[in-house]
Amino acid sequence: MVKHDVKDLALARKGKLRIEWAAQEMPVLKSITDRFRKEKPLKGKRLVACLHVTTETASLMETLKAGGAEISLCASNPLSTQDDVAASLVKHSGISVFAIKGEDTKTYYKHIKDALALRPQITMDDGADVVSTLHKERRDLLKGVIGGTEETTTGVIRLKAMAADGALAYPIVAVNDAYTKHLFDNRYGTGQSTTDGIIRATNRLIAGAVFVVCGYGWCGRGTAMRAKGHGARVIITEVDPLRALEATMDGYEVMPFAEAAGIGDIFVTATGDINVISKNCFPLMKDGAIVCNTGHFNVEIDIKSLRKMSKARRAMRDYVEEYTLRSKKRIYLLGEGRLINLAAAEGHPSAVMDMSFANQALCAEYMVRNARKLEKRVYSVPEKIDKEIARLKLKAMGIRIDTLTPEQRKYLKSWEMGT
Image (cartoon, rainbow, N blue to C red):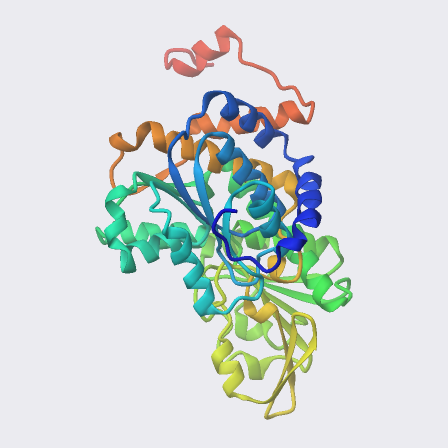
């Protein structure tokens, strides 16, 4: 048995069946797995992955293993682990997993360090916690790392800051920046799974509710789209004038948060920044306001201040905490302020994660082949990989598209021809 720390290996059979169910909707990753099994592009490479331990992630781990990698997996969020999946990966796939749903912060970082005991040559991150831990606490391992990948907007922001400061010790490919990732995963995946998490946690009717989305990036766009589809009155709050203008043109109300606070029924943060809903916001809210987060870290909501200003606190349902302010207003916080789509639901549907994790697999291969040529900075996913994933997805969906004629190719490359 490989090294591991999971909740209960007896859950493995249930996890295996759920992994198989999700894999049916991941044809792109399957095609890559078939090739990897023959070519072994990751043979002999040690890979540490810090990702949400879900059924879709399990398929990615199988792909990487098929490619020849030795893998150690830990969770990228204390509440996102699916314990049956973790058990199945250990028992049926022989992959080291260090992840338990609901683990405290101390255990979370212990698990990252347990995974790093593999002495990685490649890192695969979702939020950059492995990269951060390596640079802060395990610098002795940095010499062995040839490169890494990053899945999220939040992680890419952190890594670009490290690169700008000259602190990044090895090259990273920003998987999040691929079109086949953020246009689909962040928009359609986050949109559906966030709404799913809110409904599972609360069983509240979204139709007719005032639904406030903080941030109109791709995750915010998707969340707003699905809330509108459920019949909500959607309000967007933004700091970027271009995104605010886009939200207006898309038909949403746009206003400062201080104005939205008093009329919103449900609030969702999707910015990647800190204290988006701050201590000054809670007193402005209605009695019974529901607050949650779909950004990567639980810092978008000022939970510490909410606790301090509350005279009582109790659990109302799974993933629903009631905070009673001194004014007797009640604020409901979902999923401890962590990713609501993974804390209270199952994360993104497998059909969209198919493309995101195809990017992860192909970028790991790219890193092995090109690491010596790359500088210590953050790179975009090569266009060739992005387009190949889109091609494979269309093929799996049975969709055909046109191709340019030689005449059209020549025209697009020339400057002489006009009207």
